[in-house]
Image (tube, rainbow, N blue to C red):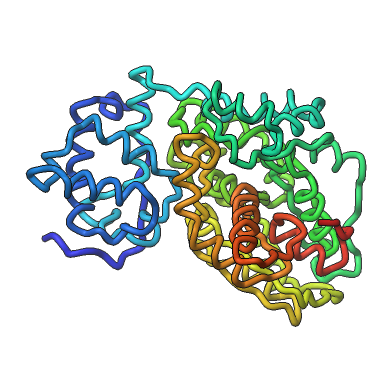
Length: 456
């Protein structure tokens, strides 16, 4: 007996990327039409991203006003706008498994991308940007030159990048550090605080993530400073990228390869008693959930999923189970904390906000909407404008709240929000008083006096 919607917790099936049916054109087209017909009749997701307005416009504008009137080649427009944020699956759709309709919109979009890739329809630039470890190893030694060339103020290189590679000239690109987090961690060893309540009771291994390792080591340094101050024995680990950039491009064999390699190394740390702590939301989602859907039979992957915490989640867990040392100082300028989609999709609650609210006498405003960035989606010319449009409510909220810190567990989202909030405030003759885009753990470290003040 069928039901209208469901109140059950969503469950997810493994991704059948190794099955022949996964990229069978006829079967995929039939499944797309089945799902789109359900979405057309429901429309609860109309305001989540641009995929759904595009879908509904395609249906409403054709003569038959149903999904059968939509051309299969137009499906690409819908798939292009999906950032795999999982918000439709996790928070909106009443027809996800275990409902009999068995609807998983993000993974259907992923399947379509895999089908297109098999047909040879690959975005060369996006796939090169997904090579995070290769790019990082090449860029770090040349960081000053690379950062000069990628700066939006560079009117020589950025127009050329847009013309040749399709990277929007106005999109802010991540800067590269001159020293990786792994090298910085090794060069500056520290010991856990012996007077903290958690001393001798917790051990954590940071999964450094490609972004923290190559682009923003200060996030990792802040995280280890906090955990050591809390008495946790902490060490850094980075066997390689989690594969999220490959997932966005539907290179599922590459995701599986990275998952097997990285999990094999992380399990060694688990065997030594370490918890695994991810430093960005997307990587936490991969380790906890997506790897297990790509390699459901891999025992290492299962163990990593069970042992992984988000960094904010971990600090909150230590606070609840062990307690915190004294010394948190108020940040009266307040914090606007953005909860990115990949943090919300982990189904752990608003841990960044919960952690920041441990800081006394500090206003914390929470934004629970998509920033619109979505990895390469936010930088490519064909989708940058959509990323800006989707993020407008977030930018406006951040600009209106006018707090002294803007933080997000997604570093690209934080960067995206700060830039656009500044521009939005400037149009109103105002100023956004933030030093820089921050991770919540950096703000927490600042409240403990563990990081140096930076200049704007």
